[in-house]
Length: 478
Image (tube, rainbow, N blue to C red; front, top):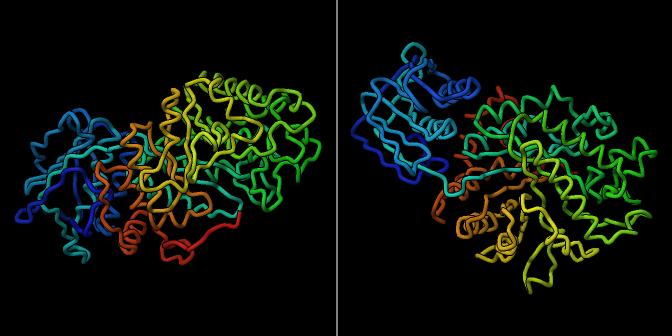
């Protein structure tokens, strides 16, 4: 292989350096089982990983989910495999359990391409004879990206490239006053937001890698769509007459106002349509500090109002063929877990009491950014109460490694990596995170910054532009 490591490392991989498959500037592959968007991504990946000096032509051929080059091989797909690949001097074969599995195998294959001669007219490449059998330890592997007013779309594009290539299954896009809704224009900043036409390529890019895009709208706290420490409110800084949609301080949506529910239903429908078909919708629900403080909401029993509201959302979301994902913190009390670095806001207004009243179709997103060294009492707590649960680390290496291990050990529903305003850390450390969530073992080889940079510039062509190349150490102050 070309780099020292494969990203993410396959479960079973071996090379025979005494044998090579050699090819030049034009290669024909027989393929079956890919969508047109995925096929185009395969052509781009082949070209980029061959230093833009080799073109791959795809022609229909074969059955199931497979790609063959040259004479092909006798590659066997074992029942436990997500994909298998085999390279001999005569040809190459990649097989997938489905279209996504075939894409995963091709993402490994292109990393094996070694350039030999890049002089125009004499192009020559080889792939060392090899065989791989691979499958992920965690089936649901998602990453959450924020679109802030100060975000650069090229950084988000780079992040999605890395997520897709490193075999994540889902991308969550959360818009912080940056999505221009038709249902309510005040939900977007006038000069610091993006049109659907500007944002749609991000969705199409994710889908070309075989990922599902999960729409997200925080439908409880964070109603300002800005961080509280900066004092902005996307709606009320434009139209104070909409104040009754929120609790008095504006931080939390008012759950007792039927106009709030109608608006947020329209928001969900518009986002789901924009992101395309899928199985999930993230409705937020974290850090609703000012819940039930208005003159109407405070007449209700808080946890009953919350459960009623979330169950109603769940019924509506499930009616569209999706399942709601919610942040966990409103639904546990610190005192239930003794000592430890546990994130919880369920003591405020006793919202933790809502947990037993909730629809079990809800997926709990257990975001715990200080967990490490196997300390994780909350994921099992939710699972024991009948909730599918995804563990959610941030960007600390020990946090990611530990929660990925917990997801495997506990049999959690999956993992949801978060990035927030630390997106550059994702660009630098995506290969490490992907290795933790893909692999069976806890060993994860070192990921040099230089190799991460190689992957990034191979996937994303900046055409020599300084600002959009590589990564910065910070992004937005949001």
